[in-house]
Length: 400
Ligand code: DAH
Image (cartoon, rainbow, N blue to C red; front, top):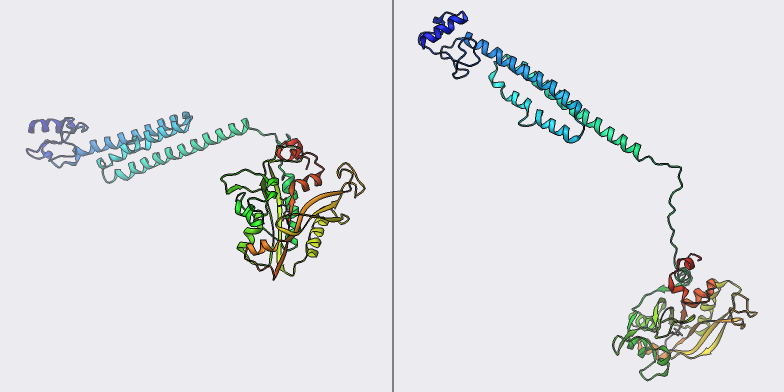
């Protein structure tokens, strides 16, 4: 071995003795002196001259490699035409197993003086690539956006697509108006069940099972004692059971009867029930309230008249007519030449009904009324066939 060292030392122009006696050369493949296989960085001879050429070469090699990376990256990045391609290049150069990272991992092979130089170069290359990736990414995004903007040009001068505007159904319009009138007179608006007990729909309203008035209100039965309500009047009972006078309510809602459909009949229609109970309520209150209501709805010149009638739950009972809004009372096809139009049923609450609900009929009196909403809407808008209100034909509904 000593001769080998001597030979190599001689080739490099170093005296063999410098390697020291029997010491072996580090024998690095990069070493210009020994140029043979052996452990890197290990020179048992401790001769710095053996290291020098090796260190210079590693540094140069790393420098060269970084420059190559810088150039290749620049070329490839300039050609990358998608985010995916950019990401691929980012992984290739800057990723954990990337080329720049691989160089950085070899920093330990450098001398303390060389390390900062190569380190600085590596960082420079790394941030250059990083910046270029960002710049290209923005460039690609901008180009994509511009392409989209160019493709999706909107002509703001074109007329827009009109939005179809909905409207409240004529029923709803009339009902809202009617509610406002009664709310203005201090009434409360209530709602009740459409599936009702026979007990409330008939019994408590003075119409026991055998009562002939039931015949005019045949309905749909769920069971013998549960039915679809034929009128909103059961809400009188439900209200009086739940609250003590003073009571002032209206209750609009759907009602049912087993009637065949024609221009003036429907198995489903709408009513508005009204009830006032307090001390000292008289028929005059009934007349005044209903007249005020009808004048608000149809105009101050409207006149009303009351005809005696019979309802099992009011005593006395009446039907109220109003002067024809079309002819003013002269007689026309709308009022069938009579000048009057029947508008609602009403009366003073029967003392027995009050007592049924636990209200002292000696102390309290009240009046009640029931209005057909269809009738009001039809007269309001001059509609001559009830079916039109249910068919939801937009050509019809759009007129109101
Ligand atoms: N419930 C009656 C009907 O459906 C209308 C009615 C008449 C209601 C007189 C009332 C009333 O409250 O007092 O024909």
